[in-house]
Image (cartoon, one colour):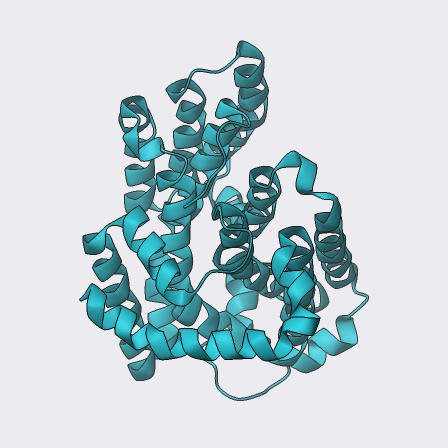
Length: 337
């Protein structure tokens, strides 16, 4: 199987080499400087996500999870579980994983927050860090018990911010100068959408258009219940934009940091590194899941999207737990493969 995959990737690598040679005078500095490259990728990602949100938001909401959902869940497992070495920690399995399993079964945020809270005790850390983590997670966990519906709804939006925060945390502290442009662009676009500055464009984007699974009223009902139409438009547009950036962070920006090689590596090397991190069985399972989701989407796009989201709901809780574990660990050994 590995030989077949690498043989299929060989022509792509040859094309990549040819393009790089032709464009070397212009791309050379960007290929050598990872910080500048990631900053440029991030800003372009935000611009493209905004354009798609203002042009084809219903398609972005429907097709995004189908095409990018499974790969981004795989990236979560790879960069938040395997590369930090949490999968080798017995206490992590004993204290954190049960909450993640319960969250996957019940789809309740409270279990994800409990898993994150237990993560503060699964690693050796200072009491100051543990207290700081509890100061944040304690009230959030209490709110998830008192107001479960609204807590789950709030997390649907905050989940997109978790990816931005984790990307910022995972990047070495001394290499963040260029990435302020990415964070600044993200905040600026989010504020423009939330404040109503782009309302005319948002209203036009959601008005009619081709059938893309669910209509706008479905998203308004599930993601902005009880809000006036203008505010519902803003909320759904903000979620659409945030989800698009969320996928890009896990599939493009985090991998740029996670590999030791500063320059982009050939596709065959990327495949070998992925196989090394996840193992062949999990990789095969991911491919089967992605193909099954795609086939399901051809038959029924809206059902496939909803089914994927139910299946992948627990990955948000994994991100919460990993954030707590990374905070407890502090800035230890860098990721890399």
